[in-house]
Amino acid sequence: MITYKEGCKLISVCTCNGKSIFKLLGTKDYSVNCSIRYKNNNAIEKCNQIETMGKRILITGGAGYIGSHTVVELMQQGHNVVIVDNLSNSTIEVLEGIEAITNTKPCFENLDCNDYVGMERLFNSYPDIDAVIHFAASKAVGESVEKPLLYYRNNIGSLVVLLELMNAHGVHNIVFSSSCTVYGQPDEKHLPVDEN
Image 1 (cartoon, rainbow, N blue to C red):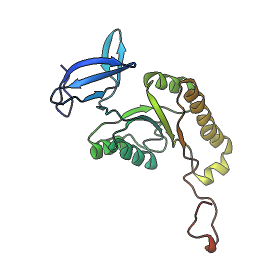
Image 2: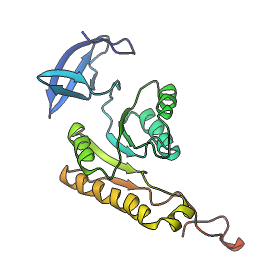
Image 3: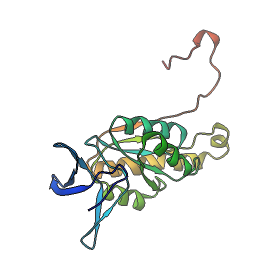
Image 4: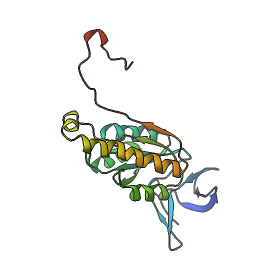
């Protein structure tokens, strides 16, 4: 019998539409969808996250400032998140903060979105992804002027990889964070900026 952090004990497993549904001791007609993968016919836990029946949402750049806040909000709303981040502009300690706020350890993959093979493996590991929120991008204005090809490769290349894999895996919902940087100085008559 598997005991989870919350003290629930696994008492039965069934499969519905390709997903493992677990019945937990002490719950009335309630089951949770756990992310399980199999190796040599043995079930091994994919992450410590006990999942609700919410949507599975892939958050690229999910360990960054905006990404981590989005992860917290989605988890508090009952969604199951998978964070993909190469930690080039964030730290692994962010995950501890997310867990402290939500009481749940999020699924995390240390991966660069430009790594097609790695991203394909991720989509295969999480076949129930419903949507993607894409925050993974470089954003420093000065550096983007100095190294434009690096920015094209990272920001456009990673988006292309993501869109190709979403299409191949039947994921049709994306929120694309186009920029977190404001360029230029608006005239006073345009303040506050209304984005139009």
